[in-house]
Structures are given as structure tokens and as C-alpha cells.
Length: 278
Length: 351
Image 1 (spheres, one colour):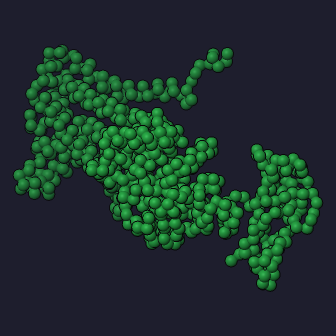
Image 2 (cartoon, each protein chain N blue to C red):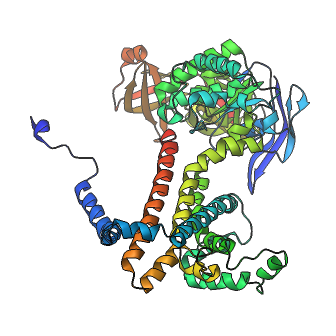
Image 3 (cartoon, one colour):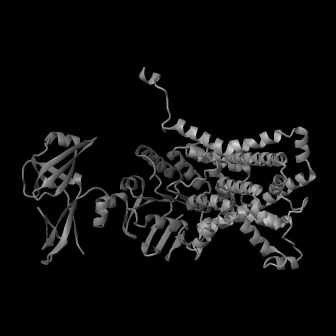
């Protein structure tokens, strides 16, 4: 039989070719460099590895990086949602200008952002002075780090939400309203569940970016060991002392933690998306 | 509930969707708003639901002014053309939505909601699909979920925007019949919008024909078909053949046709058009002086009727529909010259 002897192939051609390219590309640019981390750190032996990553200075940097990144991602999640909503749903003068400005944190060299923020929030800066008067120090504290992380992570939530809000049919809100739902009920029961998967993606991206951020943080953090020293800075410090194995060990733990968190977010997303898939 | 619309006007920028529209729907009626796209029929429906605020005029429910009332408080069920189902909720939760968002004091218990929703799902014949998500349903099923959801809040009137527009012909037929039966069961005041004249005539007790933001005719399906008030209605409700000419001294001279026209006895000539439907033309082979000669150019059998296209002496196209038996008795062939005798011509004088 002709059909039986013929190999079944997908409707879209080029599956083999594109998969091959994907794997090669990912291997060369992502997997091989990342694989270098565990390989390099195994050279130091389990004992030394454990000693390096359980050092109080290192663990406190993990704690600091994770909490400030998480906090920044949450704040970006909240305000990003509001900004994206306003930009898509309302027409006001200067909307295009604001929309274009959203991407600036992507384009700006992070060091420039860091220096600018430090100048602004320093005790004699525009924003730092009134805050200092209120007894709220920003520069050289975890709040300063969080502010820098909010700055560099802000585009992610906005940019992932915008197309989804654009697609959100006004008819859904009208349907809910004509069924007797109040404004708040429409938001809580109809709009937010729709936006949730995309919002989660945005927050995850902002969070991931914050964990690895270095340039904008080092200026505002002050980098005091045990207090305002973030993990990426610690890694750079170790590299400068030619402690390559130690640097990769610290990086490996950071990598595993980030991966676990992102995997969890992805699973949660898959679960919510499966229910509303087409 | 009766609905009265008084002098509604609505513009969108420079486009006028409604021009001083007034009409009434008495309690328990099933009314069709029929018209081409852009005629304002959907705007009118949305204004009744409160989804659109009119520039002028008012909407009355049972005699009470509801113009300023929010759609939330109108208790009017609205079924959207593309269903607007909440795709993150199951069919059950979609239908239960209107009950769950009620203020705590009026909200039924979970058991009551379950009973009510199951009852509605049975009514729309979807009792086994409560756990599905909208994405897993066919178009016809989604439409019925949308209907059940609108009915759950016990609306005082039901408004449907092109309810069958997105469905294929077979499903549309079925749902139409089903909706008619449902209306017979629950007698809920209903208004639906459609651009399909067949749907309007088949389903509604009353048809409101709209064009360019105004009402052209408001009457029973029979009135609209048999006594169209304007050339627009004549044209829109079914196919027509048109003959241009003039009326003068009690006679209408429309191209090859000459008819008595007692409505215009004056000697002054006025331009006019005559309209006749394809099934209102008889075909013979002998001339009797009241018709015209034409040549058969195309014959198509479509089930019970045969559609013919003919061209008159001046090359104008004339459509004729004959019953199968009638056609077989005469059996005109393509290229043959036959005599056409309109049984009925409606004449409209031009303004």
C-alpha cells in the first residue's frame, strides 16, 4: 500500500531542520556555557564547595538577592499592571511618549542607571533629602537595591501585559455588567483571571532579571559584606581574586535557585493556561 | 416587560447611527430588528441594554424611564454575537456567574445555584457539558451557553445581537427552530438583531426594518413581505425586478410595462419605479398585451424551485422563479423567447 509505506510527516515541513537548529543554537549559546559552571566547580571537591557556598557572607548575599529581587518583582507586578492598563485602555496626550519611555531601562547602560539613582537618592540628592529628613535612608540599604531592581525590571510586566490587554474583548466586561456584576467584580472575576498567565510571565522575567542584575545595583548598594552585598557582586569579587572555582560554586547555587523558581512559575502558568487553551 | 424607545438619537463622531428612532415592544413579543450593516440596529439594541448612552431620547421599561439606569441594574439579558463567554470558567460557572455576583443578601445558596444552573443547562440541552470549558464546545453549543447565562438572572427582557450570525446554515436552522419553541415556552419579551430577512420573517412576531439610522417599516412579517412601505423594504426583503418609468393620469408606464395607477390621477408626470418579485412573474408563449418579451439566458434548479434569468428587449436582467411542476409543464429552453406577465407590480413614486 502506498500510504502505509510512506513515512508519516507533519503538515508543516522542516521539523527536523528547525529542531536541529534550535538544539545547536541553544547548546552553543546557552547550555554549554551553563554546563561550564558545574564542571568548573566540581574541580574543587565537595568539601571545599560546601565551605564556599555555606559561608555566612555568601548565604546572606543569597538572602539579600532573593528578597530584594522578589520584592522588586512584586512591586513591578502591581504597578506594571496599572501602567499597562492605562496605556492600552485610555487615550491621553503624551501617551505615545510614555509608551516609548517604558523601554528606556532596557536601553540605558545599567551603570548609568545605577549612578543616576544613587545621585537622586543620596542623602543630599533630590529625592534622598526629603526621605532622609523622614528618617528613611535609601542609598546603601536593601531599599536602595530594591529601587534599582524595580527600575531595571519595570518594562517586563508592562510589555508582556500590553498585547494581552489589547486582546481583552470589551464585550466580556459588557457581558459581566449586564449580568449584574459591579465594576470591582468584573475586575476580580473576569479581567484579572484573563491577565494572570501573562502577568505571571512578566513577573517571572522581572524577577529573573533582578537576580542577575549587577551594574545598576553596585553603586546604590554600598556593597557592605553581610548587609548590602548582592550575590553577583560577590561572584565578581571572587573572580578578581582569581578564585575561579569559588566564583563558579556561588554562581551554581544561584543558578539552581533561579531555575527552581522559574520552573515553578512555569508549571503554575501551564496549569492556568491549560484550562483556558483553545 | 414592555420596552418603549422614544426619539433616540446617537452619533459616533461624524457618523449618525440612530436618527430620532421610536418604537414599542409589548410584553411577550419576539421582535426582529432587520437591516443591512451600518443601519443602526445593533446600536439600538445596545442602547436598550444600556451598553450605549443615547445623545437624545429615552428608553422606558414598563413605562419607567430607564435611560440613566446602569446596565448592571436593568435586568436585561444580552446575548452577544460572538457569545462573549468567560473562557477561564467552565460552562457551569459561566451560567452561574450572574447568580454569584449578586449582593450577599440576595445571593442564592450554593445548592440553589446548582439546581438553577442544572435546570437551565437542561433547558438549553447541554446538561452533560457543565464541566467543559467554552473552548471545547462547538459554535452552536457556545451560543446556547450564552443564552443560558443570560437567562440565569431571570431577565425581564432578552436582547440578542445577530444570535446566529456566526453559525453554519444547518445549525442556524436548528437553533432558530429551538429559539422559537423556547420563546413559546417562557414568553419572555425578546428583541433580536439580524441582517438575514429569512431569519427575521421566520422567527419574529414583528419585524422592524431599519436603514441608515431610521425605521423604514414596523409590522408583522406578512405586512413587511406583502405590503412593503418603501422601495428599500421591497428591495431588502427578498429579490426584486425593477422597472423605471413614470406615472401620469392614472397610468404607470414602466419601460415595457403599462399598468393602471389610480393613486396618481393628475396629468403631471412623475418619475416612478415598479417592483416585482421573481416568483410573481408568469411565463407563457402567447402575448396578451400586459407583459413583455424576454429571452431565457440561464436556468438553475435549486430543489423545489427553478431560478431563471432572462434578458428583456433592451438587455435588462429579469429574474423569475417557477415551481418545479410549473417549469416542467412549460419547459422553456435557454435562448428561447418567452412572454413574461407580472402578476403583481408595486409602484413607488420618487420623491
